[in-house]
Image (cartoon, rainbow, N blue to C red; front, side, top):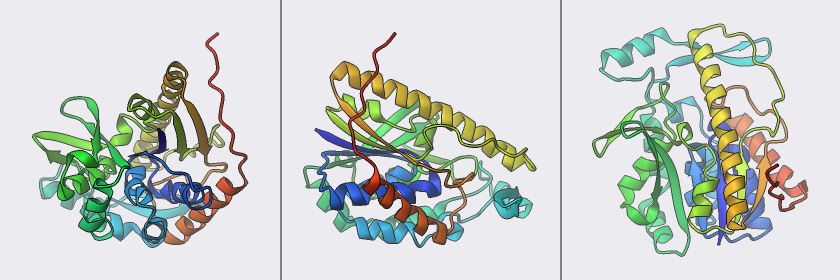
Length: 302
C-alpha cells in the first residue's frame, strides 16, 4: 500500500501542491492512502481524485479575505519581511461577539464547500482511495484521524476546515460535544498513522526546510511573539513526528521518501498572497522534477 502525506504549513501548502502535481501527473504514482494535516487536508481529497488543476486554481487565487471572516491582524513590511500586527478593532469585535479566539475563519469553510463539491465527495468515497484529515481534540487531549469513508459530505467538509483552524487566530470549533482545532497541534506529519494503516511506502511532503536556515527577528508585537512561540512548538512536533515515523517504518519494514522545502518560503504562513503562492506552486513542481528520488534508509539505533 502506498501513502501520500502532506504536513501542515498554511500558505506554504502551494509548494506541496506543486510537488504532488509532479508525483501524480508526471510520475503517475497511484496512492491508496492520502493523509493531510492542516493545509495538507485541503489538498488530499482533490489529489486523490487526480483533480490537480482544480486544487491548483484554489491555492493560487486565495487571499486573506478568502480565509478570514474576521482577520485579527494587519500585515506590515519590516526590514524586508512581512510581519503581523494586532488589529485591535477586529479582535475586540470578536470578543464582544462572544467568540473565544482573536479571529474567525468561516470564509474558509465556505471556500471548502465551493471547491470540494458533494459530487466529488461521493466519487472519492466510492473509489478505492482513502482521504484522511488530522484534527486535534482539545477536550479529550487527543489526535483524531477522520476518514472520508466514515462521514457524510457536510461533516467531512467540517473536519477539513477544523484541521486548518490555527487557534487562537482562527475559529475554535465545537463539534460532537468537543472542542477541536488545527491537526498540527497533535500531528504535523502523520507518517506513523499511515504505516499503522498498512502503508508500506510513504511519500511525505514536509513544508519546512530540513535544517533551520535563519534566526527570527525580535518580536515587535504580542501577535509576533505568539506566532514565534507557536512556530517553535510546531517545529518540535514536526521533528518528533518524523523521528517516530522513521522508527515505525523501520519496525514495519516500510520505506519513506521525504520532500522538504529546499529554501525558506516565508516566515509567516498565515499570510496568504496569491502571487507568492503561484510561485511556490511552480517551485514545488520544479523541485520535485529535479530531485533525485531515492528511498531514504532508516538509520539503526546506536
